[in-house]
Length: 153
Figure 1 (cartoon, rainbow, N blue to C red):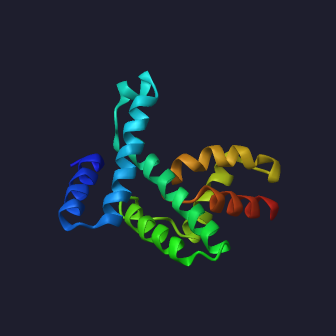
Figure 2 (cartoon, rainbow, N blue to C red):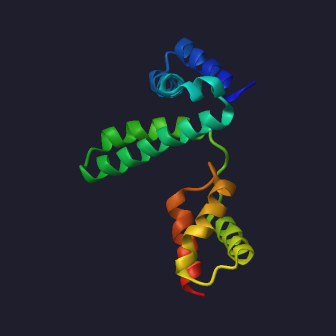
Figure 3 (cartoon, rainbow, N blue to C red):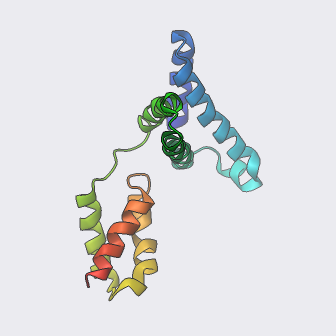
């Protein structure tokens, strides 16, 4: 079963269960997938692969995280709670996130393999490491860890 089929099945179940939060969240993912297909000829040829769908889900999750932060600053805990519920649903479809130790270990290996000398090599490291952690680590966290490691060299 592909990820898209799994989302469709869970959407149907959410409709049967009358779970409006899950239903609306999954509908947003399906809408993002359909918008992706309409976006270009290349997208239509490629179709909705699991990789594409994971990217779309990560974008949706990032939107929720940013909204939660904004709602907390505005002291709108009710809206933040709604976004958190949606984020929890989205995270169920994402692979398990790496912890900082795992990121640090991978960053050290990448720094050694590239032969980075200092902070000026940040771009080289990020180009190498991001495909390896795609979907399993936040880019800001990876950047912060790599920057710390390079500055200590």
